[in-house]
Image (cartoon, rainbow, N blue to C red; front, side, top):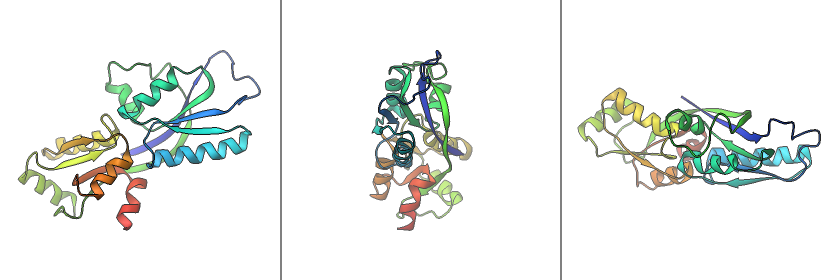
Length: 209
């Protein structure tokens, strides 16, 4: 599976952006907690685009509810292109199965572009006696319901990756959702949760250490 970090915006369909965009500072709402790869990409985008266009692009984190908090805020902002959202594929996932979203994910947003793609990875705390997926599955089968995995939040592709493993392997890992990838990884590193699903960019620093 792959995570796609993308920038979206609420645009009016009446040519409101005209010729002199941006006409004022732009808010880039990052649908993630500070510290994760989406946050890092959002800050980088804000800095580089702001320098190129000659207006400040201010990165602002609004994590929670698998991106719904950030998306709802942007959907209700003036449709003049001065409030953008930096999100990942969690918004697409929410559009697929959430029936009571406070916004229309199709009509309220217009895609600008893809920032990055990366694989979803599965990892475990060193205390877990498994060094391969097959060993982890065997361990989970021997302890049904006793092993847990962290994700960046309910309804994220990382949550679904864990549930897909449950279905495919016939095991029962318990999902522990967090309000962002950084706290999800922190608790695994601290040994509070034994298993994690995250994107490669979040996992590499911990794997190296």
